Amino acid sequence: MAQHNDLGKKGEQLAVDFLIDNNYKILEKNYRYLKAEVDIIALKENILAVIEVKTRSTNYFGNPEDFVNPKKIKLLLSAIDFYVNEKDLDVEVRFDIIAIIHHKKETKIVHLEDAFLHF
Image (cartoon, rainbow, N blue to C red; front, side):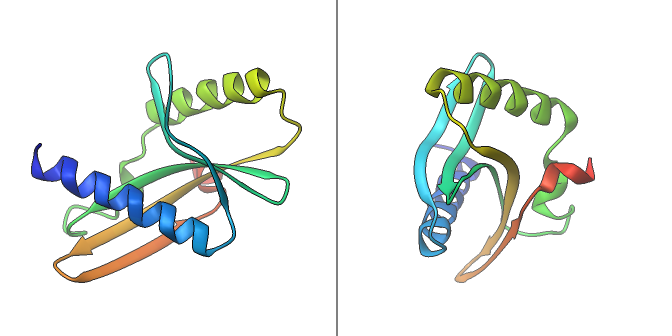
């Protein structure tokens, strides 16, 4: 497996652990619908948090959250629309980004709630 894939998997596990520590219930990991993949779907109270995880070893080329593009957002929206309807959920939906910079033994995690409001 390529080194960036290993970093991505490690980042997703760090994000899951972070969410659990912050009282989220993990419902799905790597949920797929058509061409979309949702990294994490979690529930906290009555909020369904749709979470895109971006992990980098450095912010030299920009912050991890800067790499979520409009095409990815559109795919996530369609996947979650399907998910909510399929599961017949009555929840508020929020789109978050968890940005992780993991370099050697130092890890910085930033949880950006309602991240897509800025696009």
